[in-house]
Length: 213
Image 1 (tube, rainbow, N blue to C red):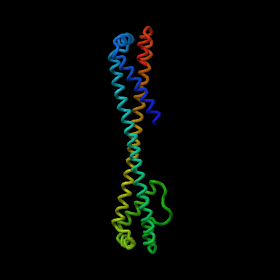
Image 2: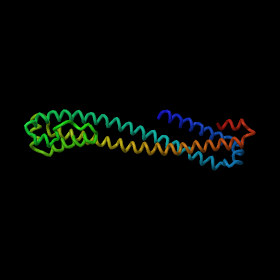
Image 3: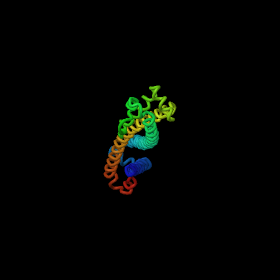
Image 4: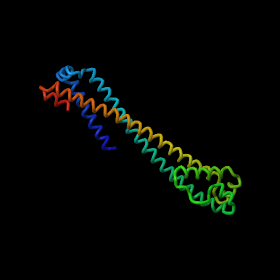
């Protein structure tokens, strides 16, 4: 990413030099105009350049947003998993003589290690516990209160929301990267074309041609 950004910034710097020196030198403008590089074409190139700079900044912003959401998600997920693990241990002890409740809260067997499966398993645990008065009574006797169960469910929902934001941000980042790459490619192609034409138009004035590179 850093290498790509540096390459784009170098191209932008070269484009800025090209445009500035065309506009600042009447002899260059006149020579280029005879070969089709008119003031209108230079203006259009400048406008395209401005679009490219906006797309560049947008892509950086979207990519940074994706990284930020990823960090938030990791923090929320770690907290949710830790709380859930502790709650499961207490629930298994509290409900060891109630196999139907162990089944209800999906407490038999190992924990699902996949993200989607883990979220679903946690959701069943908290929601089913909150929906059953007898389960809540048994859990509360071991210090796992309704308030704590609700907090666990809230943490879980926050982690699920954070994960969803990552996917949204990833889509935005990918889309903005595609737009940036397209406009940067077009800018590079137009700069190259202008320089080739300038090489013909300013063939007898190499010192002016050098100003555009």
